[in-house]
Image (tube, rainbow, N blue to C red):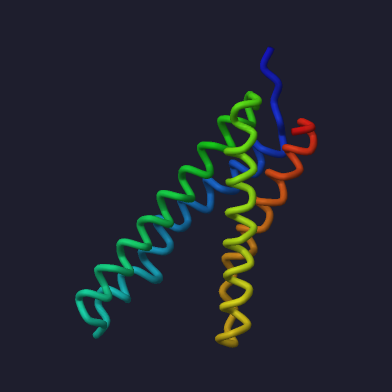
Length: 127
């Protein structure tokens, strides 16, 4: 019997929104200006690669959360837990770099709810 876990579904929905925002908005606001900057081509290439690695991670996180929100199985609990902690740690990283540089990097606003909701979903499932 399949049971829906709304915490995981909401976390997955926020994560999918974040992935789309990262893909489209980030390309326009961050990637395009970086590629037109005076940075060395090696630096641009490596930063672009990392950008796309992050995009892939966010989409995979959305998949894991949405899939398991529809039917969390025992063998998938650690995947959900890892995804939750990754997003919490991503949020912490943005808080730290914001403080260090004295500027607001608001990505933590999306990262923390994904991780927290995923952990709540595991708690609801008693995993």
